[in-house]
Amino acid sequence: MSTILSVRGLNAYYSLTQALRDVSFELVRGGITTILGANGAGKTTTLRAICGMVKVTGEILLDGKRIDRLSTEKIASLGVAHVPDGRGTIGALTVEDNLRIGAFTRRDREVSSDIQKCYDYFPRLRERAKQNAGELSGGEQQMLAISRALMLRPKVLLLDEPSFGLAPLVIRDIFAILRAINATDKVSMLIVEQNARLALGLADHASLLETGSIVMSGSSAAIQENDAIRQSYLGY
Ligand code: ATP
Image (cartoon, rainbow, N blue to C red; front, side):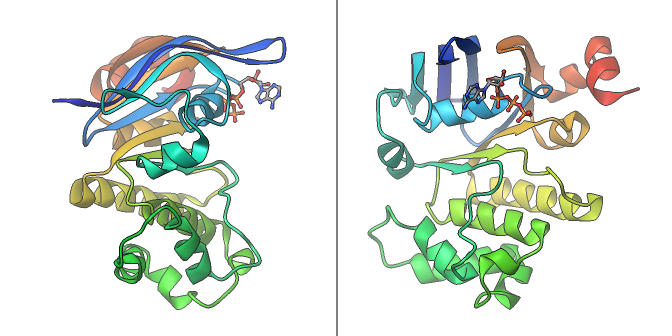
């Protein structure tokens, strides 16, 4: 099993606040890793650091090559797509235009067929193709945000709390589709979540972040069996 993304000794600061402390983990090629943690643990900062949106010390390697000094645009063009918290879709543009924007780094002619592929994964978006994104429900906006990221044809998909604010049935559908995308398109995924039960059900590997430090890492199965995690994060 090879590694697609390595994060080594990452430190990040917001003026005097240290948000990440010596954070290290790896994402296996084709795998799904989750980073779990409570509010303010540093989950969003970790994803923003990988995308070049937060200054860090330490190393981030994609396919063995350093990306931690590159611009966000360059990192995206190398195949790292980010589905941010708040989703980041453009409300005043149609669903279809949002998807075209997602392909901004691409030079190939397969953009239209990839839009159809997104619609196959999320048929609700096909029905709403000509509607403005701002008119979509929360669940549909999350589907659009994921689809827009897929339009980059990413090697690595970074997802920031994809379950946030959504109804249980919608969450179930979205997570099932993420699993299908991972299996079919071999997109490696890094998902940060507060909903540990959900994330551990999807991911094969997990790390636990507490006040900026990774305090535990292992297979999802092993983490699920850990008593401290069960009590603090799974509530049983
Ligand atoms: P949540 O689940 O609440 O989104 P999180 O695990 O994603 O939390 P981060 O958003 O990464 O946590 O925040 C980590 C720490 O950095 C927190 O102490 C937070 O207050 C601080 N922080 C985050 N963004 C900023 C910012 N723009 N300016 C100053 N401090 C920040």
